[in-house]
Image (cartoon, rainbow, N blue to C red; front, side, top):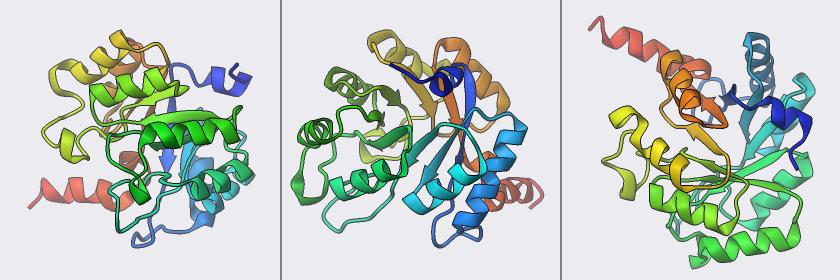
Length: 229
């Protein structure tokens, strides 16, 4: 059963407020203020990385948070909430939704998604989970497993989706996922214009997550500078 705050996200914008260690805005304090700015602009949810950032976000806004914890491991391509240690840390923050890599790639230690999913559900049966997927097949598998939300976060970012563009053929990937899954679909990944955000909601997505084009000034600046070169 979704809370009132999560129900209010339906048809609305979620802003991803993230800055990795090598980026100029890397700071939990800054991400909290970024979330406040997003809320003032009309966001109905925030996606944030690490317990520290999530804690700061929650101090600044009363919006539902999609929490993740990015970590790199030498034996795995999976970096979005890859192990139970990250799940434990995110649960402690009270984040409403925890998102994790739901691709076919093996997790650290060679663990499969199915086994990891069952471990999470056994330990935290009430925690809402979002599947970050890169292909239609991965989305269908996550839906069958029972993820509460199916996200298109990793389309174009994995080896198996390297030739995919989320907006291709009027968001064909999203349309196919919507047609074949039973859980709410969250549009995310290269939704970099208001018109695209509007379109995926029209198609039936539960909400749309927008990140870099709102919260990464170096990325925005690069787009402007590139057309003047």
